[in-house]
Amino acid sequence: MKMMYNKKGQATGAVAAMITLIVGSGVAVMVLIFVGVLSGQAYNIVEPELLGIGNTTQINYTATASNTSAVYLGHTDIHSGSLIILNQSNNQIPLGNFTIDYTAGTALLKTTGLGAYNGVSIQASYNWGNLEIQDHVFSSIKSGFGALEQVGDFLPLIILAIVISIVLFLILSFTAFGNMGGSNTAL
Image (cartoon, rainbow, N blue to C red):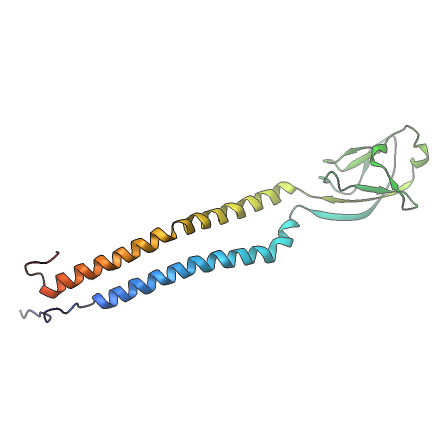
């Protein structure tokens, strides 16, 4: 069996391992930076679509006003504060003249002083949908950015650990491979 020894001071494979470690850590840092930047840009691009989740607009849904039974306005989950009811002349009828169930999407004309509107065609415009879904989407996006920020906060420690690893690897590899396991080595 023939033993092969390297010349004194030769570090076989150590240079390639160090280059791989340095390049790998550089790529990892760049990926972390690019993920943060691209995530923010992607969010800015799709934000209008995200705001549309659970928020649909209905314009001029036609119904007949009634003071005896609630009139369905076309959708459930009407967002309060978005409902506008117009009469046949396109004049707004104040919502105080109706009993409105936003969840069921119904309006009942109050009987006091509004007999002229009973049986009249009205048009309702509003936003409807389940905003709870939108809230869940936004909270998941915020937690994702929070996790990315937390990793970014530890980025200096990660880089420091990589630098320390490279220095230790250099010291150990040159002393160990330089004497090939002889005396006075770190290993």
